[in-house]
Length: 100
Image 1: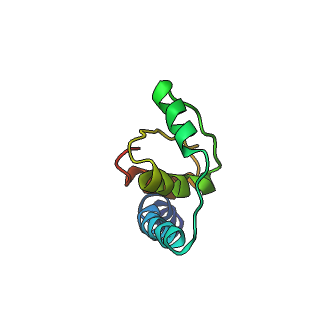
Image 2 (image 1 turned 90 degrees about the vertical axis):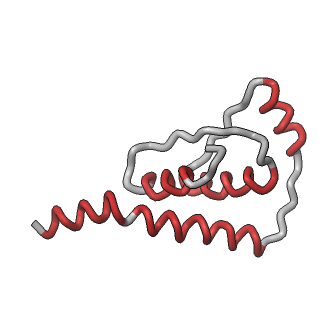
């Protein structure tokens, strides 16, 4: 009984606070770092011509969403995540961005 309750909490409730903490941790990280962007105009031109595919590990997706929001808000994008335990909080973070 307790094991089933813990599994439900871990699967359905815990991803929401983890996503909140993760999103704002990424915001603080980017705010506190000096970022030099190279090749953004070329990337935007490829995206405007018909799109491109950017492949990342789960751990990089939240950072990428914040990067696009800050440096390329006009680019629309979609993300594919595996249905895994570590993918659920990241999916919640991605759903909180309007262009995803």
